[in-house]
Image (tube, rainbow, N blue to C red; front, top):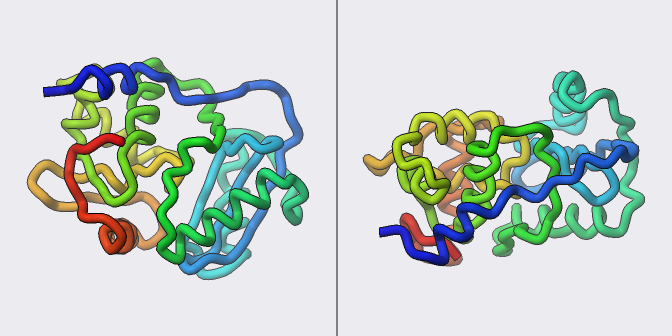
Length: 203
């Protein structure tokens, strides 16, 4: 049964800020391949990872420019962004981090999708939840398939940890990041190396 604490958290919307700010793209290498962040100030609007080269990461960001518009690729100049880059590099090396304090802007979303993304951010490092469980936590218990669609189109993986959402039969399921389900399995194994996975547990 869904606890009161979990139900309250599931109603918490994803943090977002729509104020007009100059966007930049920062690219950096990690143990999980090249990553790129699209940021407006310290607010993350997009993340991609698992790329074999800097150019591949930048190319993916540029291919999605129609969502947010064009952005300049620059060296990180914001202390908050520099700190996040260091945290993501540490995470790729196996250092636990839930990234819940990171501000994100997911753009215009339905109330349902905002609840799903918010609930996904509450899945603890080293734990998993099924699509059905996440639907319950988002107060839409019959919407497991729609939850899957939300996860497949998540533009801020790792910070919104869609890799922790798995199928009810025990299979890890698909993953939209480079490497697909192999990358998803790698992330889950890395996190389980620090903590024993306990499906369905929220922090």
